[in-house]
View 1 (cartoon, rainbow, N blue to C red):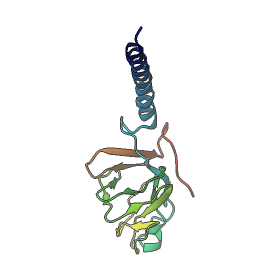
View 2 (spheres, one colour):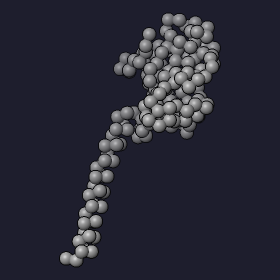
View 3 (cartoon, helix red, strand yellow):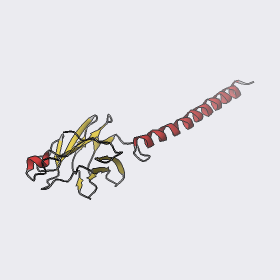
View 4 (tube, rainbow, N blue to C red):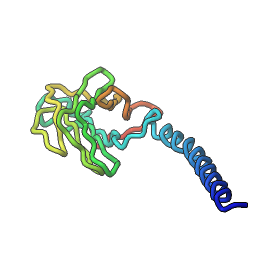
Amino acid sequence: MSASLATRRLLAAVLASGALVGAAAVPAAAHDDDRRGHHGRHSSIVIGDVQYDSHGRGRDNRALNREWIEVKNTGRNSVNLRGFTLTDQDGNRYRFNHLRLDGHSSVKVHTGNGRDTHRDVYQDRRHQIWDERDTATLRDDRGRLVDTESWGRRGHHDNHRR
């Protein structure tokens, strides 16, 4: 057998084995995305802790800022949240403006008024929106579902901290 024929056969075998390994890896990645609940699209941005103030249904700014939703970046790279939205089940919506969330960091989205920082942003609302039984939905700048978190219902995760 000539050297060039042997080289071509070896190259064909290497390429074929690479294609098999690549094909085997695709279902595992798709399964992981489904398991994380990101509807086929992996995102390092997730909803973290939830704090609602069920006892102090007051309207003062301190009470409003005691309720918040944490948005976390679980990845290494920073993510621009501009245009992302956070909504409750009643349709109240907060749209992120100029915020770049560093890797392995989080931001709390407070209900009341305050000065936005890289760790805390404020919806500037005058009434509480997160109920004892509610759902927070996070969507990206194109309206695609990124993550959702429900609490206070039987069978749903309760992420409330007092």
